[in-house]
Amino acid sequence: MKVIRPNCRAQFAAEDIEFILSVLGGKIGTADCLIKLLADEEERDLILDDEALFHALLERRGCLRVSSRFYFYILVRHVFLRSDLKDREMADYVAEVLAEFSRSERARCAVPGQANPMDYFFEMLTALQKADDRTSFFIRAHIGNYSLFLSGVFPNRIRFRAEARGFPNLKYYEGLGRTQYRMASDHRLAQRFEVAQVLGTLAERFGATRMALNDIADRLFSIGDESYALEALLSGRGEGEGS
Image (cartoon, rainbow, N blue to C red; front, side, top):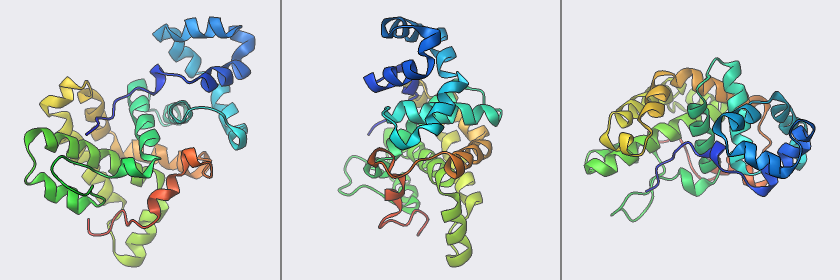
């Protein structure tokens, strides 16, 4: 099982370098200069916080050639700043969640000793009752991530299903995600994987984080390119059924 960690702003594809230069080349200069600046954490964060990158992603989204991690980090970071969510590590972690869960197979919860990955929260919560200490951490972190992803990216879908079919509403997702993030942050493995602080912050600010993602979903996502095919998660799977 994989632990999601905040790695988006620490790795860049060649396309990302080209994109940054196409937007900020007048300030930065050559590719060699940019690569040197990105190797310095403080300089790198200043570059990624440049509003010009954010606006360029919105204006050019129909023909983007950037990595999914770069795409999501820039969007998340700048929208979070507008929601007074200033923690870069949290923005980085949430961007990594979006990059991972944009691939439908990653949203499934696979645990050792279980033949089939779990799709539904009730399965994951049931599995927690028999899980060993290590597995319970992974399941709790996954539930927190999945709750944030679904309630952040598909709030209208959740509202419709709650009103029309009696499925869990957004308050359920918030409560579930907040609780599991908190429990995961207190686990010894959270310290080992260096995610205790970010999971704790997400537990405390789940509602604000979810609403900031709603803003991205409403105004910013360009869904259509297979790299960002988030709607694939809705095909053949009921995210709230049986939760």
